[in-house]
Amino acid sequence: TQLLEQSPQFLSIQEGENLTVYCNSSSVFSSLQWYRQEPGEGPVLLVTVVTGGEVKKLKRLTFQFGDARKDSSLHITAAQPGDTGLYLCAGLNAGNMLTFGGGTRLMVKP
Amino acid sequence: EAGVAQSPRYKIIEKRQSVAFWCNPISGHATLYWYQQILGQGPKLLIQFQNNGVVDDSQLPKDRFSAERLKGVDSTLKIQPAKLEDSAVYLCASRLTRGTGTGELFFGEGSRLTVL
Image (cartoon, rainbow over all chains, first blue to last red):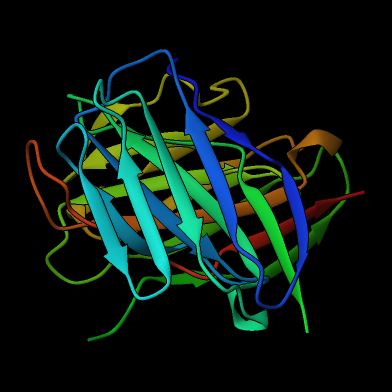
């Protein structure tokens, strides 16, 4: 079983601060996805990164895929209360199995 | 476009009872997943279907869990008999892309199971 470790598990910050969430594995993935999940709902896709070293930006969110395609990071600039939620990374392997990390629970206080 | 539908949203049962969850994926999506998400953790894959065939069920506790996807559309996940540690949210997801690809998974709202 391929494992994805996310850190930190919990993060509580003030509005306007920056933060980075990490997703690490010893396995290589064909692509990596980041999802955001709110209470009582299913995860919703934020981005998919495919190429080693790839960087994608989504407004204040910046996603990076490691050169070796084993790790990824999510950086949020000037966090807002609306960014509060559970952030999940998920790796897709050659067999199309999607494995999720344990998640990072983010709380942004106004 | 309608999303992934799941029912029931909530279910409370006593241990050793049985329960069944239903999932209707997005029309045309060939791949269907069932995930178990225990409170405070990330989703754990239980079973993956491609049309009506099982692709991976290596993490499904087959002594008590079963799943089927007859006709390659709707799917049901059954637990019999339930244990306390089965308390979790059961998420169904579907995906359009076949073969290798980066297709997005679309999730339902989940079925929250509480075993007393």
